[in-house]
Image 1 (cartoon, helix red, strand yellow):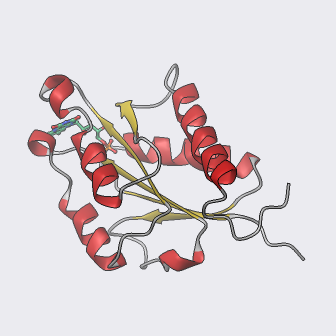
Image 2 (cartoon, rainbow, N blue to C red; image 1 turned 135 degrees about the horizontal axis):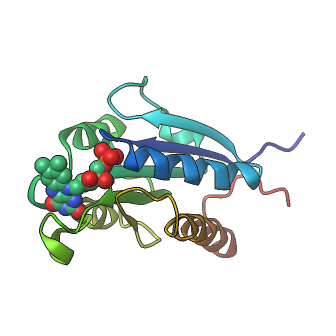
Image 3 (spheres, rainbow, N blue to C red; image 1 turned 30 degrees about the horizontal axis):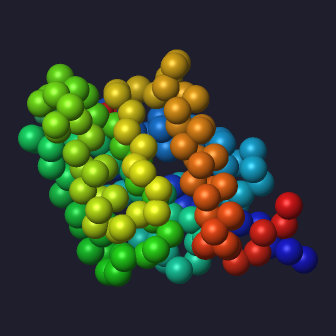
Length: 156
Ligand SMILES: Cc1cc2nc3c(=O)[nH]c(=O)nc-3n(C[C@H](O)[C@H](O)[C@H](O)COP(=O)(O)O)c2cc1C
């Protein structure tokens, strides 16, 4: 029996925007036959990062472009920098304009030396931004497969 590709989608969301992005990522990967675990940062039991082909980490951006404390704690909980970490997030340009928009995503991409650019969504992904989310996920998966990264067992 050949096992499916496995992904964890870890996210922090207070008012639901980042959670909506996490759900869109989940439905896109689900259509691709991935086995998925959703992990609500600060709520669910810790994950074992080594058991996943892909790790997605999602956050909103807080006070003056900062990363929420819960996300920092999650990073400490993981305890090392997995190479298969892909970053997404939501923000709002009303808080500091383009310079601070989704700044936490930029910081985490840099921290993990993520192989893909981070996904930045303004508020809710519903509507026109949905295709941006799906396109980003396609890009992450395609890039990793082409480069032969992450993949333990790829079946199709
Ligand atoms: C006090 C406060 C500060 C914020 N600061 C920023 C910021 O610096 N940059 C940014 O892009 N968004 C900022 N935001 C907007 C949130 O990141 C945005 O609303 C996000 O979608 C919330 O995510 P959630 O619905 O998953 O909780 C701020 C929001 C609040 C309430």
